[in-house]
Amino acid sequence: HCFIGMQMGKNYLYFSLEVSKADIVIGLMSLYTISCTNEPINRDDMAKLKFKDKEKFRSIYEKILELPGKIQIYDETDLESYGQNAFNEIIRRTDKMFKDNFNSQLDNIVLDHAQLLKYDDAKTNRDPYQVLNIYADFFRKKAARDQYGVILLSQTSRQGYEQACKRGGAYSLTGLAESNELERGATFVAALFSSDSLKASGQIQAQVLKNRFGPTMLEPRAVSVRPEYYLIGDGYGTSPQQVSSVFEEDGTFSNPFGNLPTESLDDLLGGM
Image 1 (cartoon, rainbow, N blue to C red):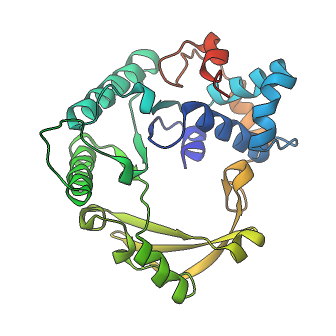
Image 2: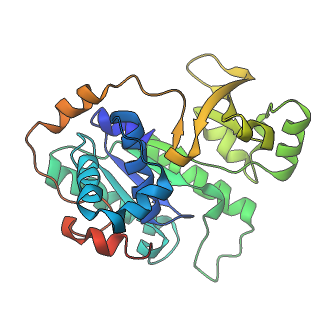
């Protein structure tokens, strides 16, 4: 979603609470190669390429930087604390960065994933169900007030997954883990179902469980998936030539991957 939006000139703030910024960068680079070049490089080989061919690795990295839309990625190492004020400050600072550097604004916020949200305040005595509902309400209001698109990735509950297994991979809205506010406040809810047999066939099953402005798709539909490239679906309808023409445009760029300058790519990926 971010990669498609960046090709369209949309700016993203990505909170990654489970994997590092380096992993997200590698995923974007791998996705670029399978979508926009004739030389696909999967995630594992992309990580190795950093050591085998640094110049080639950097050239792919710079193609991501040249997309018309930008992405600012934060992981847990960037969060001084957990709480609504902390997320508000990062969102405000990122929106300002886009305005100051690119004369544009923040368009979309992605958080992966919602069940990892918490509060650092020891006095805050809330169970996980309450925490998730409060945060879901916070991001819903943020979207409405400031006109951001907000994508909250969510796990399903164990019971929800077991029920989906019995129904041929069909989820219900009650399958969302721990939060009725995620369902109630969402405009659009998509579900992805996987199993060993689906993985073996290179597929997942997709549903649209809720859509306030259009049709739903309650019957699961098989969709191609290439997890080694971060690719879901059969492509994006964008040829390498079309994307290359975007890269030929002039423009300035300041590194979006966290708070590091562009030249510190090695520092960003140093933990790999």
